[in-house]
Amino acid sequence: MKLKIKSGALQFTVFIAVLIALLLSGLILYAYTFIYMKEQSKGAIENIQIADIGIQSLLEQKELSTDTLQIDFLRKENQTIKTHLSRWGVFQKGVTTTQFRKKKFTKTAIIGSVITADKSPTLYLQETRNPLTVVGKTKIQGIAYLPIQGVHSGYIDGNSYYGSQLIYGRVEKSTSELPKTEKSFIATLNFYLKEYKINHSEDYINLNSSSRITNSFKEKTKGFYSENAITIENKTITGNIIIKSETSIKIKKTALLKDLILIAPIIEIEDETNGCFQAIASKRITLGKKCNLAYPSALLLFQDNKSSDGGNSNFNSLPKNQIFIDTGSNLKGTITYLQTKETPDFQTQIVLEKDSKIKGQVYCNGNFEIKGTVSGSVYTKQFVANQSGSIFMNHVYNATIENQNIPEVYGGIILEQEPKTVLKWLY
Image (cartoon, rainbow, N blue to C red; front, top):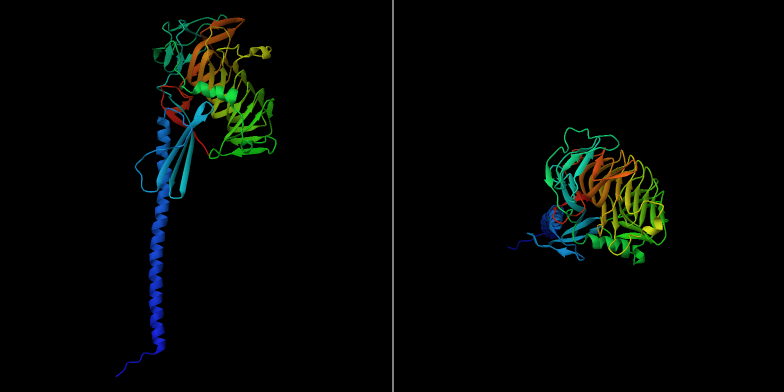
């Protein structure tokens, strides 16, 4: 007896089989996609987490690098870390890029030396065989490194010292040299001031093209260069940008500058200017009244006086080789004066006027006149006080140097023997 199956039943059976196959294939595809996406998400999260390994390696790296380096770490297949450490003005710029398959994550930071409020020197006064003399309402609080002659009270204009202690903190002996900056620091400053130019048209920005100019630190550095004086006003300029003039740069209070670098022999910053930037000069920097520069701003004057007079002859009517911070200004960051040949003189290289404040670091291998407040750390060869037509060497008059009104840990310029830290995350 023959069994007959209708064609409709056979088609239905085939349809059911195909449907089951499709459902199974869909489930397999879903499971694979889920596992793949989970792995991708996990890889992206790990990229972010592992980027910290790259940043930590840069904090421990001693030398700057011209190339991007791949570092070894415990990783899984298809995952890499690449790092790059370069100069960014008076600080360093660290870049770490992690990649898992096609997913990339980049972390960029400004790096400087660690300063710890309760452990780092609040004052480091170079050994010059002259004692520190405190007068008036001066207050020095924290760890003080002083010449072997120590600290005394003194008199200026009939005013004696009014404090109950000469130093409110521990006193240590200083040495005949200030703690040294990193080895490549002077070479970098010479490059910025004497050699830096924009070589390719694609790296050039036109300051007159827009009122708002931005360049990410994930992109190549861009800049503006002129042999003539530059005035920046009615502009917002942000990011990975260097502006250089062979003559001078003036910053008007209508300009808002963030994270960029300014380079010129003379840099003048108008009263009531706000921003966060670095200014590197070879002749003079003037910060006007009631300015506010956010952390980590930096003013640096570099006097290359090994084989020259420092270029004073063209600017006889104005203070030469000086950083001048006028009344009521606030700067969070670093103030630095460096000279290649220390010469004994009575000139004042950094002036901090009354009611002006620095939160951060002052480093001066010349003479520092302080009338305001430094909250943080001061390294200087000598103090000067110009009063009533007389110059008082290693005198501090009506000024404050303290370690209370600052973060527990912050950063300054790179010093040779100091560990490094992240000052600011970039974008």
